[in-house]
Amino acid sequence: MEQPKDATEATRQALASLVKTLPQDTGEDFELARKGFIATIPGAKILNAHGHAVWDMGTFAFEGEGCDCPDTVNPSLWRQAKLNSIHGLFEVTPGIYQVRNFDLSNITFIEGDTGYIVIDPLISAEPAAAALALMREHRGNKPVTAVIYTHSHVDHYGGVKGVLSDEDIAKGLQIIAPEGFLEEAVSENVLAGNAMGRRATYMYGALLPRNARGHVDAGLGKTVSMGQVSLVPPTVSISKSGTRMVIDGVEIVFQVTPGTEAPAEMNFYFPQFKALCMAENCSCHLHNIYTPRGAQVRDAKAWSWYIDEAIELFGDKTDVLFASHHWPRWGSEAAVSFLKKQRDLYKYVHDQTLRMANHGMTPLEIAEELKLPPTLAAEWYTRGYYGTLNHNAKAVYQRYLGWFDGNPANLHKHPPVEAAKRYVDLAGGSDALLAKGRAAFEKGDYRWVCELVNHLVFADPGNAEARHLQADALEQLGYQAESGPWRAFYLTAAMELRNPRPPSDAPRQGAAGQLRTLPAEQLLDSLSVRLNGEKAGERELAFNIHFTDARERFLVTVENAVFHHYPEKERKSAPTVSLTREALVNLVTGEISLPHESVEIDGDAASFATFLSLLDRFDFWFEIVMP
Image (cartoon, rainbow, N blue to C red; front, side, top):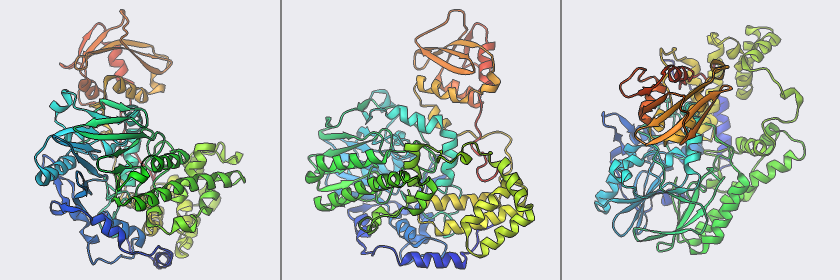
């Protein structure tokens, strides 16, 4: 396997210039990140049932105390990486505790009268269970009395089975979430789950070695855990700001914030603790208005408005502010100052992007020109460790004006491979294009190398020289990137260009773990995006489906190459298929096939078998940087 290379002189000079523009580092963030520390486990190393590490902070030991920033890492990102390496159980305020950096997100425990209210049980079960065990070790062996999901992203619900048993779930222990949580979680993580999951391997550096030439940090946290992910639906939905609940003796006042960092999200306040949880609406950096892994563009204006509302509702009553990522802020003055600058950060990006758009500037032009004002640029917690001004400006433009910049030359462009062939021909052939690319590389013009040589890679992916030059340029851009996701995208692409993955015999399918825990209606809805329209053609199919575990019935039809399902309906002339939801998932993913003992079909089995044959199986390892 070909290894990463050194930083070039151009990269070293670029990073040296950046250092001169950074805010003064007073050490305050490190004090805040360590405040209230109680205990941790060695290296925060967490194993699954097979003895494999699903989380291991020990692999980031190269970022430890006394380790200077290498010339292959942006010094601002290096600082954030050190902050995100501080792990363990922390007291936020008496009665509120967080385990930080056992996963990408924080898990928070609220001490109630009889047990623990859990906020955001991480991405996967094993880290969540380890965090709960650490809490119980130091605060008492108490039961979990409720779970709160702050929003619909997987790092805030996927580990729920690490803190709740199947018996807890079956007896209806309260799981509280904002209204629309389940719909949005399914939409983002299941309907587009395969594509998003593959892109997430780039965004979080999952395939990169953990060292100074590989993955150092994701900005939002270290990276993602690799344990068991599940989706357990909430039992209580919060639909209105001002809603109050008393859970295990703890009063909570909710603020719903739809369309902010997630389509379904909420902040909440604890009067008895004078503590405000800002979910993921405020974190110690500029967040994503558009996330490079792929998701709906977020509403920067609404985001800013809801932060302002939180200030009005809770600011003067808040002694401590904490969130689902990073470290808290203590004191009302510090909390409100932080909230105001976070508020203005998102509104500034929104307003200035539209100002320039109304002058006729395109997304690329706006992104190149947009800069923060001095008061916002002076703070570490407004820097682009996760989102960037560049891609967030494009996101605001997209939300209002769409992907089209108005120039008809961009209205119906050739797809990548066809365009690439024409560009290579225009350049005078492969050798001529490579010569131009090498010359640009020597000048340190890595962005141009990537744009130029990408055409040759897509026209001729077998051209190893083109792939390697493209990889070299992407690598230098990765070393220069302040954003953790940008670095990870660049370096993962470089790795895959240098070491192409051999084709697999069978596709490895993404999102299957969450499919198994979906309610029946959402499970059927997820199948609609698997139906291959070309294969379906003019076929008309119908069958009744009876989920024996959920005790629910549906009529399923295919016509006009479109899948429909209707709850509590049936067609007497159609066959009836009786099976569990898990059996259907196993059929769809190919783990079992018909006939099978777990599937009972009353009537003609052909239509159901035909339907299964029309469903695509998505390959998680589809190519990104090659055709």
